[in-house]
Image: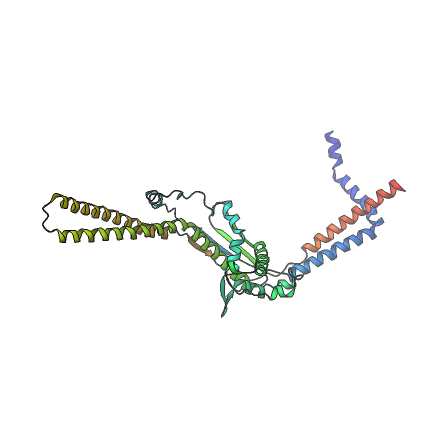
Length: 351
């Protein structure tokens, strides 16, 4: 059995099969040539489209990190009777971070952010509509007023339906051409890549998108601490007011009763003194916690370190011709051979 199998796949058998295939090609050369020509023209068309539709690509390599900043926040929260101040699972870790990048809010906020290009400052969405050149490609079927539209406000709550439709269209295109990934799973270096047809637009969007993510990161990471800071500020103010009132009341009482004879008057003075001492202790403790919380906000804010930044001009490598044409020719030839073989089987079985 082993000898039969080895004979089956011997070089001699392969050569005989190939020689036997040549007459088949000659008999069906017309059909095979037609399919091969179709594959050639298809590959050539794809090559022409890709060469004239080159995208300008840029990348930014960065590290987004923050210190684990408990800094006594849980203790402060419990002292105020607040729960749920534990960090829990971060939305910026693992798959959560990838899902966050796909949300519309990030793109909408960035699109309606004002940027400076040259000597002009305008909403990024307006620059995109001017420089994206999509009316000749992906958006060629859209009406002209879609491309000529310009945003008048950056407030998401006050924009109309047309504004939202255009923002969604821009977001969809940018989402397909923007990506953040880890080159090395063992490293914390993240790479942001952006592709558009305009190098200035690519450069501006890469930096704006990264800044929008960073700002959202900072706002999210420090949100609870900022809420707690407001509560602590009110607590310090209320204790200060209560302390000043008690101290003033004690001073007035002592001025009016400089020579205390009755024990009842002495008890009132001692109570006022005790309240003043307790309030003073509570006030100093609240003030110390308030200052510590301010310092913790600085440590809690993440640090963005850019390892490799985007630069202008963006160099585009010349397009390499031939690969897709070769694939088209090979596929056309194979499809032609298959079609000829199917026709041969049809004639044998039904004629």
